[in-house]
Image 1 (tube, rainbow, N blue to C red):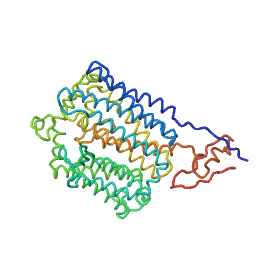
Image 2: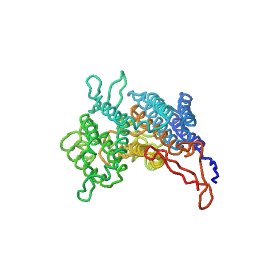
Image 3: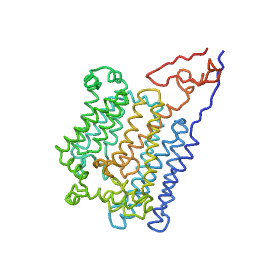
Length: 485
């Protein structure tokens, strides 16, 4: 007769507390160092800033203990650390902008958006007990995503800034709906691909060794992707177009596990890039800046010159290995130093060492998201985690690659760190979704599924030792037979 034993599983919440303390202290320490370096005194609003920043982290942590006790303990501290570093750099630039009589006050607005973003993450944890509910809204997400992309093109609502029409006006504020659209389209791609992945992977002809799907299987998702890309091209949003293309190919590869999609994606990217450079003047201008940044004619061209890029490169070079220190550099010489070029600003004052540390946090955050996708049992959750994690990783690559001249500049912003409410909000929504899915992935099998509350472990027939039971948790495999011999 089988003897049932209960095995205690660690939730990871104590580890999260330890990591959260470090993450919050990093942000507060940077904030204090900026004030001391630039004014000689501790910032007057330190208590309010530190209290709000730490309070937000504590609220999210406590809610996770209640609604998602088995969520990944590393994702939240990573996002908090990145947000805190970004807030400190934006505050540092605010002080200089104020001295120079330039528009400032960006740090308080970024703090407000931090509250909104972390509030959105907590709302996801509170109201969504199961991420698979989102699969019911696959086509609703498609419609919502395309509608959000079209909003900036509406007369009277859209705003054109720096040549791109990707913003909408909300009173005195502007918002970039494309940031939310990428999450909606990720949900659509995950929902559609989990239903059609067998047809995409197995059905269809082979051409030159590459397995191609049938048009009727691939048609809906290609149509959705093509419409999104065309809208973004019309808005002259090169960066988001590249981002959408990248995670479209990545999710196809994860769904089908066929390398042919990577090859096809690279071929399409190469051909599309060449076509866009010859058809659209603003794309060709970006390519010329990339290839000939130090050419005097390109450097002095206005608008569309390489001055911003070159100044950012010289700023990072002056930072060297260890940086000039918080508040000791001249990052304000680079246009948009607190948004598009915040990576160059951080490189000047924190040096290569600081940049590598920040890059390691992004790597950890992405790795935990992918690990969550591996651990969760349902196909929809796997694809959604892969898509959302790839969005963060690819955006980091595109931004750093553009600033360091590995690829042309695209206009994307660093996740969590750069100034911008819509970007910060969308990235915290991604954090909320990853935390919710990670709870399902890490929750002990005995607390969910057909054996809930009854069976946690059974003795092995060979050794007699206690072996955890893992009943299926996904809608792809609703049941699993457990041998109780």
